[in-house]
Length: 379
Ligand code: NAP
Image (tube, rainbow, N blue to C red; front, side, top):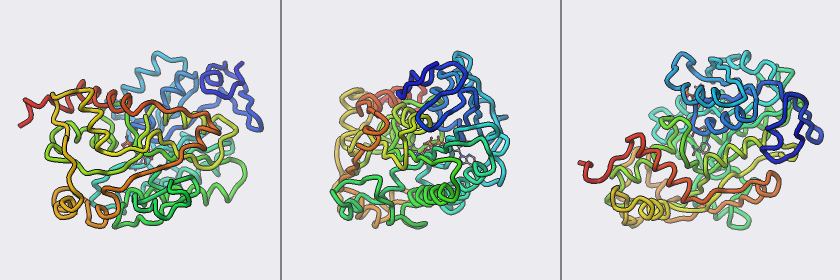
């Protein structure tokens, strides 16, 4: 039986006890993944299935078989098993059955949209109440030993301008987002409230420990190429002509979805994991995205080549893009994003794929699924 700390050694082990420092996991126990059909969850479920685990996949509607077919195809070819459970973040007790017998809970479910009409209902409630619902269920489920919550860099910082208030001009796990609200960056606010809720509940008990994974913008191919994640719509906009007349110079962090899955595996099974982890491979910006895509896919797609001046974005931005306010533009456009990812590298041995790989693989998937079309066909 494998006892190593690095991914594959541990996950190849046969059914039995996986002994890791103080924590002993029963490798035959099922593992819960909430939001299993989501973009970020897809690669995590794959890793678990490849490792021989039984995955309890909590999804909103198991009757929507079209959504499940990608995970089913992986399960068919792997030693692990997948079982679906119907669960809704807002329904109290909804995760009871799915969590039964699980020692590790991965809570990934939370809406990721930047175009909410009613942010309280669409973002805050499912994020915050959903986290409360899942973690209070962990309190009631004796088998649970560790909970991994998929938080976000959005719970670390709100605007790029927040960099000014950091100790060494970079965001670290010690930072919390204090600038977002219901009316300014509501997605970031939802992730902040959700993570704070998670720590509050974790500190109120001692049976299970909490580890949070705080990814920056996640890129790379999806297990389900049609997942609802805003990651897809953003990369799509680089190649579908939306930004042809110019892009904003926005500093942003980016990380590959497969590296985020590895971070979750480490957070779940590595006893050295503790606290929050910024999981971000690259401090980058939109012009770098465009240049990578242009170099890789050439002239066939209408990638942006010009960067719009900030004053112009400030004037026209609010009329062109939903939920883009002058305050958002002032505090983000033209400003860098810088995060310190050293804690995850040090504690969990994380490594990061090149940005070129993540963006190219993701854009290729959009092409393969006809979600972007070569320029001559764009009207
Ligand atoms: P996604 O593909 O849209 O996945 C969101 C998941 O949440 C879906 O599985 C969805 O279930 C589930 N969900 C949403 N509302 C729900 C509800 N009311 N009840 C039950 N399940 C619900 O987006 P994603 O990018 O993978 O996001 C997954 C997690 O990663 C989120 O916590 C997000 O904040 C975090 N994250 C994402 C990024 C990124 O760049 N993508 C970066 C940092 C953190 P259905 O399949 O049934 O719709």
